[in-house]
Length: 322
Image (cartoon, rainbow, N blue to C red; front, side, top):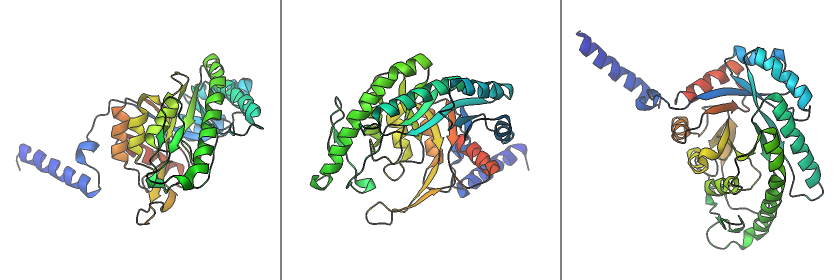
């Protein structure tokens, strides 16, 4: 066989193999403009656990120990730097700023977490301001109408919204409280050099892509950004829709997957969170969206039951656009 014919046949076989795997050949061959680093969640970072993550090809970690204080955090930073690792962010998680009884305490705790993140050498703190509930539309029936100047919601679905009125009122109350809390925290974020990274979780707030983006961008402040979890909101809309809506507001990414079951008539059926690449997230499309918005930085895996080596390999495939 002539060399030209051999190369042509090899290209055909490669493309066929890619299609068989459900991965477009053009996506596999894409040369991404952006660079994604691999992160793992841990408690207080120690030499032992940092070495474990490094051996499995992770570039850094996200610590859940936000309360250890800046001095102890600085000790962990020295260890990480010695190993060529980075403690890139801290996970504070849930607050309850819509509860007046806990508002001041939450502000104090988040302030401490920002200072601790600075000690670690991290540049972002994951915060969920609060949660609420009530009777809500089915996940794929959400169609939120809100005032872009105040973020106050008037409707959450098409048609009669009477059944959802209590939820609408609770959401508006939570939004007002969250705005007040974040405004109080911005000076601390600026002082510490740590971004307040608002995550999308099942807190029943700012659910649709446009509303989530509007809430983050409302502050018009470089110290308020989005920590976008790629699997958390799959039941509401496609992951890539959120990425394009948020754009350069995204400061960090979590890698997670979620399995839908849209055979359910209410569109709310789901099989739940699953291991990476076993769910409904369209990873090649998501990787392209990440590249399109120009995101460079950490993607940190969260959850999953696979061994760490398998998680690392799956992350490599996602980062490669597969």
